[in-house]
Image 1 (tube, rainbow, N blue to C red):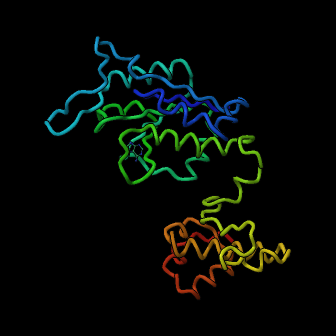
Image 2 (cartoon, rainbow, N blue to C red):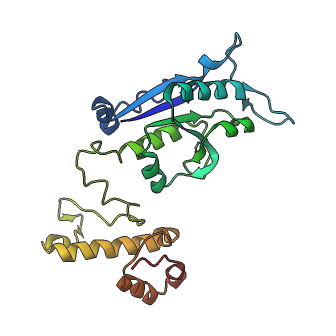
Image 3 (cartoon, rainbow, N blue to C red):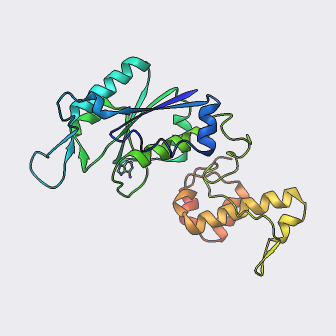
Amino acid sequence: MLRFTVVTIFPQMLDSALGHSILHKAREKGLIEIDMVDLRNYTTDRHRTTDDSPYGGGQGMVMKPEPLVTAIEDIRGKTGGARVILLTPRGRVLSQQDAHRLAQEKELVLICGRYEGIDERVGAFVDEEISIGDYTLSGGEPAAHVIIDAVSRLIPGVLGNEDSAADESFVDGLLEYPQYTRPEDFRGMKVPQVLISGDHQRIESWRREKSVEITRERRPDLLAGASFSTAEKVREKEIKSYVYVEIMHYTD
Ligand code: ADE
């Protein structure tokens, strides 16, 4: 069981988003628990203030440290070894590897920022800072949803079919191969013959080849982190994508 505690000034924002499909079933099965904590419960003034104007001037508001740090300390005290993550566009960008690492934890606390920024000193009270990509959201809540989703689906029993997390994009460091379902001919576009051949070995090597090809075309940056057989390295060289092959990690 993995418990996520989300600290936010909009505790209702994620409720409906997390109440559907796979995550909903995972919660019902007791495989994950998601608790929402209203940051305003940790304010001490009459107006329940969570932000203030920036020192040094400038546009927008900055989240005050006291409510956030009091919330972190309170939740840490209640949960023991919780891992506390601050969601911010200034964090390290989330990868599938991070999702696997976080899926090993028992308690994750996701701190959602709002407005234009968070007081820098909050950083001293969290275990890590994570961004979900190089773009700015108006708050950390969608990022918390992304993390909960990416992590939960890796917990055994969350996906109906135990195999379905094994084959998809990023699992072996590559993008997924093309998938097809009926009809065999859609507006003149035919399903590749090999997939109808019934020859599982040929299908497997076709899929692998396509994975490498599509990754090379769309996300060549990923090739450096994937592992290849000797034959594939030779083929990559022939295709003259040698820049990536040279920096590749040799695993066999
Ligand atoms: N808050 C605002 N933008 C974000 C991002 N890209 N990732 C995580 N948290 C954020």
